[in-house]
Image (cartoon, rainbow, N blue to C red):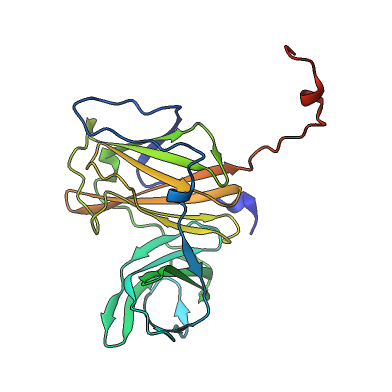
Length: 279
C-alpha cells in the first residue's frame, strides 16, 4: 500500500493539539495520565490467529455498494467460551471503517456490511475467552466497477467539535501515549456521553501496512467532556485511529492519523555523546 494514499478524513471537526499535561478542573473527576514508561498495563494483550481455534467464515461474492450478509463461527479445541465478539472492517487504504457487534444465531454469528468501493478489505474479528483476547484477521476481495460510494454523513455531525491532546507531545512505539479527547456540542462541553457497552469510547487503530491492529477502551469513563484513552502502539509509522462515542442516542465517529515514532537509541559513540558537557 502506498503511503501517499493513506488519508483519513474525519466526519467531525477535530483539532489535534500536542500537550504535555492535562488541564484539570477540581470540580470534575480527576483524569489520571499514566507514565509513558509504565506500558504493561496499557498493552493490548491479544493472541492473533492462534492455534487451537477454528474460524469458519462464509463470504461468497461480495459486491461493492450493496449490503452483504456475513456469517462466521469460531470453535476452540479446548472448549473455551467465546464472549464479547466485535467485528472491525477497513479497506486497503484505510479510508473505510466499520465497527459492528455481530448477532448470535445458533452456533454462528451474523453481521451485515456495505463496502463503499471495490478492492481488498481487512476484517478483524475479536473476542474474549477464558485466556484473554483473541484476534482473527481475514482479507476479502470486494468486487465491482471501482466507483466509490460517497460516505454517509450523519445529521448533526457539524454541531460537534473535537480536540485531541497528545500526552506526551509525541507518540513513541512501545511507550504509553494518552489521547485526551475533548468533546463539545454547539460550543458547550459535553458532560453526558452515553456509554457504549459500558465505555465512553471505543478505539480501533491500524498501521499503514495493516500489520498492527489495536482495539482499546478507556480505563477511565467520566462521561465527558474529556475522555482519556491510553494506548501502546508496538510498531512505528503512521496509524489510522478511529474513535466512537454516543451522545443524544447517536454514535459519532472521530478519525485521524497519528505518526508513531521509533524510540531514539542511545549511541555512546555518537558526536553528541562525545561532546564535552555544556555543548
